[in-house]
Length: 113
Ligand code: DGP
Image 1 (spheres, rainbow, N blue to C red):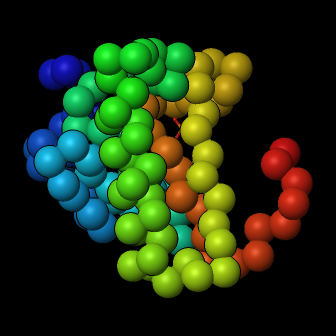
Image 2 (cartoon, rainbow, N blue to C red; image 1 turned 60 degrees about the horizontal axis):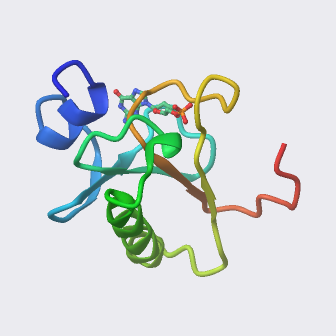
């Protein structure tokens, strides 16, 4: 999608601090980190949000989760980490390209909100 900032990041048209890439997935450090480690994991194919995951494209979300495990290990998040997906306006999504936040590098506690 030509006007999507995360599509442009995955394509290398906008610079990012890349931590992982494979055929299906791209991951980079969040520009506004909320934890010592804050990484965004995205499918290279444009999916607007988690509400747009279907039987046909769910393998891309699966590929993101495979990458998440690999990235967490590479980042030394042996004690654990949090994965967050904000979906839609009420979910606090600000960029309309499916992405999973990896947050870690400190004890995050048990509260979600
Ligand atoms: P969300 O609220 O779930 O849509 O989170 C979007 C995240 O994307 C937010 O934490 C900031 C991050 N972000 C937005 N634009 C850029 C960018 O151009 N580069 C990087 N690295 N992160 C970005």
